[in-house]
Each structure stands twice: as structure tokens, then as C-alpha cells.
Length: 149
Image (cartoon, rainbow, N blue to C red; front, side, top):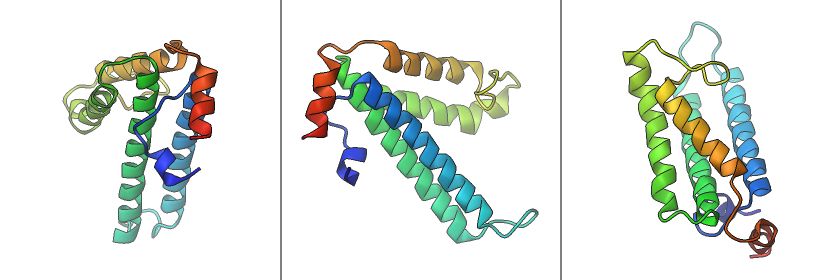
């Protein structure tokens, strides 16, 4: 699989490929975060600029990859503007993390304890929709066409 396929916004993605890609992106992000945390200077000391830059680049790659994956899945569901819809949910998540969690003490339950109920329910609704809603055309054919494209 090339980098173009990981970050490509065109094409369609079936449910199984979306689930595997979603789990893969989160697993890769967690592994990169753990690796960068273990290379840090230790507890009580600030991380080096190289570690911060690596974490920031990993976060940007993770966000762009999930945005592309969600856009392809929304396109296979027949959404009118998949990049805009997926981008709106991404921006809502970032606003929630950076601002809304500072303004209120309300939080979701595990595993979304860092989110307010607004963003938590929005993300949960989006991902359940993407995981469970059938595509407009045959998903096996969409996955096969994407594999050999």
C-alpha cells in the first residue's frame, strides 16, 4: 500500500476496509505516541523539541489519514460533500479538546472520558453510521476496485 492510498480522498471504502483502516490508524498513532514518550527525557522534565515535532507530525498524519478514510466511506454511502462532512466532525473534535473541555466539567463515560457530551455523541453517531450503514452499491466490489486501482 502506498502513501497515496493512505491519504487519498477519492474512491470508496466498504465497511470492513473502513473498520480495518480505523483500527490501523489508531493503533499506529498509539504506537508512535508510546515510542515518543519512551524516548523522552524522563518524568518531570520537558520533552525535547524533536519529540514534540515527532508527536505533532504524527498527530497531523493521523488526522489527515482518518479524514481521508472517513471521506471515502462517506462517498460510498452517497454523501453529497464527504470531505466537508468529515472535516466538520474533525473540527468539532478539536474544538472540544482545545476549548469546550476547559469550559465545562461534563464528560462522557469510558472510553471517551476526554470529550464533552456534545462532541462525544457526535463522534459516536458518526462512527456508528460509518460502521453500520450499508453502501449504495456492493461493498465487496468497491473494496475490490480500490485494491486493484
